[in-house]
Amino acid sequence: MSAHELMSLLGQESLATLYMTFVGTLVAYLIGLPVGVSLVVTGPNGIKPRPVYNKVMGFIVNVIRSVPFLILMIALIPYIRKVIGTGIGPRAITAALIIAAAPFVARLVEQSLLEVDPGVVEAAQAMGASTLQIIWKVLLLEGRPSLINGAAVTMINILGYSAMAGTLGGGGLGDIAIRYGLYRFQPTIMWITILVLIVLVQVLQEIGIRIVAKSDNRIN
Amino acid sequence: MAEHIISLQGVTKEFDTKGGKVVALKDINLDIEKGDSYGIIGLSGAGKSTLVRTINLLEQPTEGKVLFDGESLTGLGNKDLNLNRRKISMIFQQFNLLMQRDALGNILFPLEIAGAPKAEALEKAKELLKVVDLEDRAHSYPSQLSGGQKQRVAIARALASDPEVILCDEATSALDPKTTRSILGLLRKINEERGITLVVITHEMEVIKQLCNKVAVIENGEIVERGEVQEIFKKPKTKAARKLFFPDGDYREKPLTKTSTKNRVRLVFDEANAGEPIIANMIMELGAPVNFLYANLDVLGESQKGQMVLCLAADKATADKQKAYLTAKGVEFIEIPEDEIEEEVTE
Ligand SMILES: Nc1ncnc2c1ncn2[C@@H]1O[C@H](COP(=O)(O)OP(=O)(O)OP(=O)(O)O)[C@@H](O)[C@H]1O
Ligand SMILES: [Mg+2]
Picture (cartoon, rainbow over the protein chains, first blue to last red):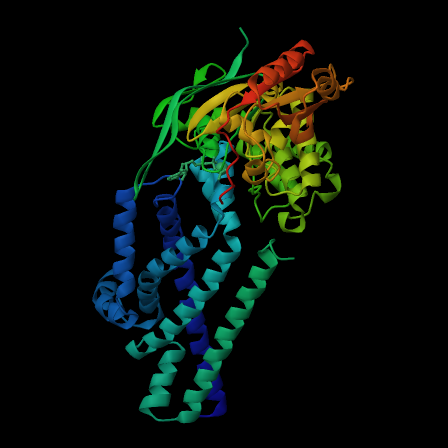
């Protein structure tokens, strides 16, 4: 493979990886964020304790989280194929990523919101704020730096998952590593792929840290 | 009959804990009049915070009723409760400001909640920053403010909803003495100038003396004594109240082991009888000495009051003469029971 071909392959598969990472994270948050919020709000010390809902939802989240990602994905592929028509490629993998990551996101969001000072929540209650107002204006706002931090962690995790999914024909950088690095034993390509992955992770992490620092008004 | 802005009727609060049932409040009946600055004082764990939190129903009473402006809050739906809560502001020991919003943003918060028009709200929030002397710190975040400044922001926030009552739970306990005085001064001004009723929770008598016209003493979840601060200061009836008037370390067990605990009296002097050397005259005229155990000058709101604990003559006849002398001179006093000694403060 010429250097040019290699570059274009890496470029293309990097994009596929980023696509899976961003879309996966976004949709995982669309599901996980409300679930995480609901776990905090309905928790034993929440503003609207609902023990039954809390237990059931907490259980579902835990069950999905306890299945290792690769196994979960293998188990899900037949169903994904039924729904979206294909069991391989970035789209199918993204669907699996979302299902695997959403409960992870829910727990991270829960953790972030539990860190919000209960005194501030109580002050808002004393002012006559509604549950929705407390969620929007207190929990999500005060928890913002921690939430952004969690989002960066999630993205890096999903990037790692998506690379692993390459082994299942998912496309992306993981796919290159398997096909060229392992099957054709081209260590150079393997190492270049690893390098690209490291760079991507570092960039995401750095962006996350910067946004957190900028958005957190407690430290300046 | 004066108007009761807040009325607690037979309020009991029990907590279910792993260690069993904790009764934090027992059958509390309390009426607070419009414009009062009502102190609630007691030692740690007495139930003060629980009591004040039942007033705005942050704590749902196990039994009993809470009336606000004649209307029962207990049993209201969330929406109506929230509307009423806007009329009852609260300030806290730990300030409880939003860390991610600046001073102005914090003051805007209750206005946003109430759905006030933006421009109007901003105008008002700026005005309130002036009231609390912080107009130059509008865009400082709580992490950039001192404790006293944070409490000022919290007070401005409390005023934003035009409340009828402000509940203060240990509002100055995290502050140094000088800052405490300035915050108490600000609250006093708010009470006097705006006619806002204050409910002041504290474990420090100094706060009551500087800020309140009425006080209730709470012990083990029960109100054991209540009334005008001036009256209770002159004649505290219960041991709990007496204890609170002696600051730590001034009146302890140790000096008393060397002196008698018989015939002790506590006197209060005010402007009316402070001019004359009554005790000196009494000693000379009756020819019997007394032992000074404690003396202090207190400021109660605007007035000054001296308090003194004396050990009168050991024999009953002379002691009675001394008491008659004091009464004749118009000095109010109470007798301290022989077995009452200040315990070492354990905590
Ligand atoms: N949520 C709770 N669960 C269980 N017990 C509680 C709870 N809140 C308060 N209590 C108990 O109720 C009693 C009164 O507590 P409260 O906080 O009202 O006291 P306090 O007078 O405000 O004390 P402090 O001066 O230390 O703040 C205490 O015995 C306390 O342990
Ligand atoms: Mg308390």
